[in-house]
Each structure stands twice: as structure tokens, then as C-alpha cells.
Length: 413
Ligand SMILES: [Zn+2]
Picture 1 (cartoon, rainbow, N blue to C red):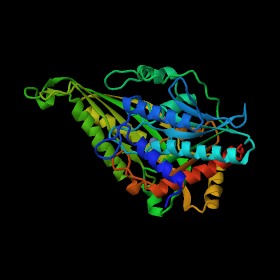
Picture 2: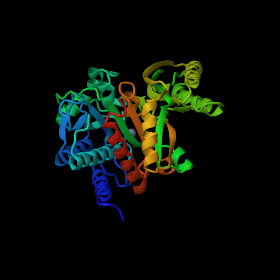
Picture 3: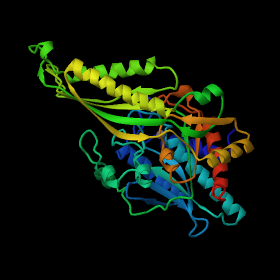
Picture 4: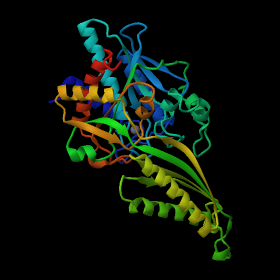
């Protein structure tokens, strides 16, 4: 039998999963779409119903504030409710709902026990963490931490040419609130990998993040007839792109030593016509590794692969770095604090790394941060079949509640 608070959480999670629900059991809730707006409005009423003050800032980050001690700094806790296309219900959303429920439990405790914790508490739903509709990813936390200019964020366009700013305005999500830099930040997320499942643990204490380099690749060739133009005369941009994609994969697979994830996952082909050789292909290229030298090696390999593709396909290739983050540790005192909370609560836990970027990847550089994981079944993510069990979700809420209980006392400050 679940307690009433556990039942409330699971029923709220079910409601939240209806916004942008897909027939395959997932959600499609890309940033600033109607489905994302519905989820955000639902969160707004949930927070207001439970005594939070809700505000939006200039980039559409949504904050729910609980003031225990007037004028005191805030502990901020949250994640993101936007999703990839045709994605799972847990990525990001679980973290926002856990944050809201854990914060509400702290509020109940404060009201029951009296007293004023030295720090206030706020829940955040960051705008556009996924970066699928508008790039770059981690947009709301990027602007919040000063890593991304608001103009760059506003002017990001989706594939149909719609600007992020216009979509935020359409939904009424641009506000004038300025959240001060928090005293501490906490986030919980599904692992999106299988290391915790393999180790049979419930709580991961994220101790460091992998590094990443993300590029835009533009392959330029020349438009020609697919029938009458001889192969020798072609400058086929799609052929050049294919060489880059397959050579990159072969390179990454042939390496030994530290892991390297190398991917191309988007492609825009011009003119994209069945009887015309492509004149231009735009694609992304994504390198990730827990080791900086490996990431640099990967970058040099990409340059060499491009040279080869240019000469074999007779094309020109532009490689533009669009986003990168270094592998770096999370706040060691944050990991220690989470370790003692997990041990007090009798959780099965250990330190883990994150391969994926998160809003906490930005936040940890400006404020002491605690980052937690719960397991993902078979590591499936960015897929409708993404799954975290009810028990693990509830353990995560417990764990976040215990963490916030310490953070509002200023234990990380
Ligand atoms: Zn996420």
C-alpha cells in the first residue's frame, strides 16, 4: 500500500503524462508547442493550489516560490517539462514533479513544526532543455546562467522558420520576473542509461559529467541530373555526407581506451528531389566522452574524415562548433551531502557519471548543486518506451525531500 502522498504523486504523474500523450505510451511535447503550454499551465495551477507564487522570466523559465523567511536567498529545485519528438514520459518531467512534491512536503513540515528555515525554496521548470525544436539545448538554464545570450535564444528558429520568442509570446510565457542567483540548486532526473540498473541501485549521486562537442556540418556540392550527369562529373553533397557519417561511426567503433559516442542524427537535404543530385546537406554532429583527450582526438578525426570526404565526393564542408561543455565534476560537497542523505534514508545508492547534458550541467558552474538519478529500465530514453518504475520514482521523491530538508537549512552554503 502506498501512503497518501505517494498516491498523490503517482496520480499527478499520470495527469502530467496526458499533455502531448502519444498512442505509443510516450509524449511529444517539444518546447513552446501547444502541448508544452498545456503542461506548463497545469503546473502553474498545481503550484498555486499548493501555496507557491508562480512567475515567468524573460526566457520563459517558470518558477514557483515558497517564502519561509522574507528576503532570504532561495534554494532552487527542478528540471524541464519539454520533450524530444515522440519521446518518453519521464525525461525531465519526472524531475519537475518530484521537485514540486518534495518542496510541498518541506512546506508542510515547516508549517507543522513552526520556525523559519534560513533559506527559501523555489521550484523551476526550465524552458527548452531538449533543444530539438529550437537549438541549442539547455536554453532556459543557459540564459539564466549567462552562458547563452537572450537574443540568440529568442532568435532560434524551428524547421518551419518560427522564432522561439514568438512562440513564447503566443503562449504568454515571457515574464518580467528576475530570479536571483540561488544559494543552491538540486535536480533529479532519470538516468537514460543502464549503469544503475546493472548495479541494482535506486539512487545515483551524479559526481561528474561527460564532455560534449556539438557541431553543424554543411556539405556543399552542386545540383545535377541524377540520370544524365556522369558520376565523374558529380559533386554530390549527399554522397559527401554519407562518407562523413559512416567514417565517423567506424572511427568511434575502432577506438580503444576511453569511450567516445559519435553521432549524426539530423539531415536537411537540398533540393531533396528524387531526380536531382543534392547541392547541399546540413547535418548535426555530436561527440561525447568522459575523457577530454579522447574528445579532442575525436575532433581531429572529424577534421581528417571531412578532408577525405571533400576529396572523394568533390564537395566543400563547413564545420561549425555550436555548443560544447567540458567534462567536469559536480560540486563535491553536494555529492557528499547527497551521500549522507541517501545513507540516512537507507537507499541503495552509488556515485555515477552523466553522459547526457542537463540543466544542472549549467547550474553547477554558478551555484552549489546536487544532481540525482533514478534508474531507467534497460537505459531506454528519447523513446516512447522510456520507463522508470513507480517504486523508483517514489524513492527519488523521498531522496529529494531529504535533500531539500538539508539544503533549506543552508547545509551546502
Ligand atoms: Zn532531460
